[in-house]
Image (cartoon, rainbow over all chains, first blue to last red; front, side):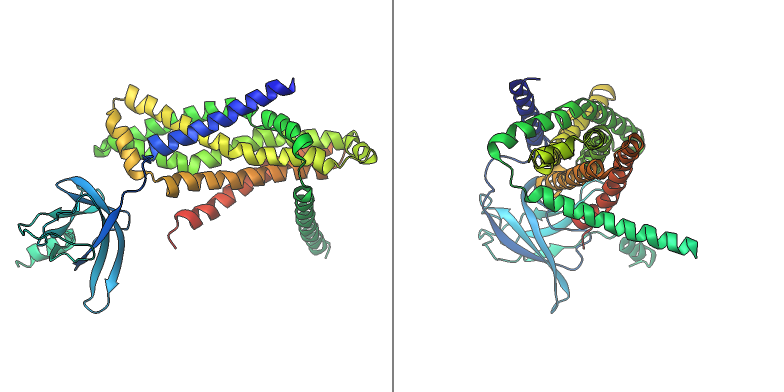
Length: 149
Length: 259
């Protein structure tokens, strides 16, 4: 086979590989070509985080507005401290809003939902949520029910 | 006593052959590739190793994706969550099946051909006559083949994953009627580019390197008879498959094991 034909077919082969990688990036992993959005960090203390993990979703009214950065244990209060990055354009979360851990579907992943408060002031970067609601634990729910509490 | 001696002998020869393989690799890689003369050689090898393997990779990828779609649908629909089929297919293919199955096919399709070709060159003394003419066979014959395997394997694995995901869509969406939006939506929500796609590509790079190394080493080191070539070809396929499966476990543990 002539060298030129070989070069062309190999070139097409490499292009097919690049196109496939692009497909995996854009269509399969949903990577958007725009730059990473600027975010600010807020914190929330939970008694029980359930199955919350970093990279999880933070949503408000069902719309994703940020991601969970880290889940650490606060050794003084024995609570879990969750750091989350909120998109900068959502800068008017009322200061008395509550962070609630919810489950999508019956067995789905857990995420943090922010239920809106009524205060005029809004959360600033580095602030901590005033009130939180921990993950629903079915075992605890059943044992509370069984013991009649 | 003879049994123990035989065991010791086989142990020593195994270590020796590992050492020879390592020195062989160092010899191949230390020769700086010459851009002008080396490039056409690399292109020819990329053609025979990569382009000619494309057909088997595409066909297997399509069928594996379709089978995943069918199996996934029957299992997931019991739980009423057949919309998660896209996520299941994409994660299985991108993380595991894409790199591993492509590497196994690659070892069978391209690795065995490399071994047989180099082994026959050795048996017909083409390699030693090259040396007589002052041409380094490591640089002229082995290095382009090693690099070609190393480059072609990730490309093939990526194409395999893409075709498999498309085949899964063919069965899940077109045939069994999963909503197309939830197929892609669930997939995009759960597949991460860095953690899943890039890790899959890293796996396939490692597999490509190992398969190509085993193939060219077995060819270069074979006993120069027809029986020797045939046993070297068999060894290539067996060793490559075992190495790929073993390394896959190690890489998976490191990448997705969370420790």
